[in-house]
Length: 94
Image (cartoon, rainbow, N blue to C red; front, top):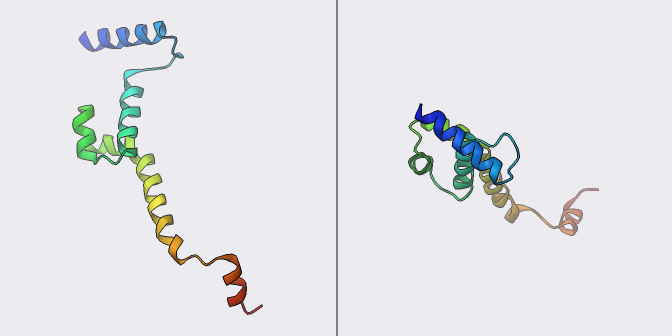
């Protein structure tokens, strides 16, 4: 079967390159999807690049990167409203 031939060839190349055991085409595909998400690519773009038909699967690959970006965005919106420590002391009732 062609798929197994590719998988076996990939494993052989990883071994020859001195990579740790457990490297797989699946892991490489997932890593590429995550890196693309971190770079700001849209889910449909990532699906086209990694040639994945299921957007659900692409979303699963990229969830952590998207979560990190959402957190950064939320925190950047808070910064203008945060008062310096000395201003907080002046405003307090204590």
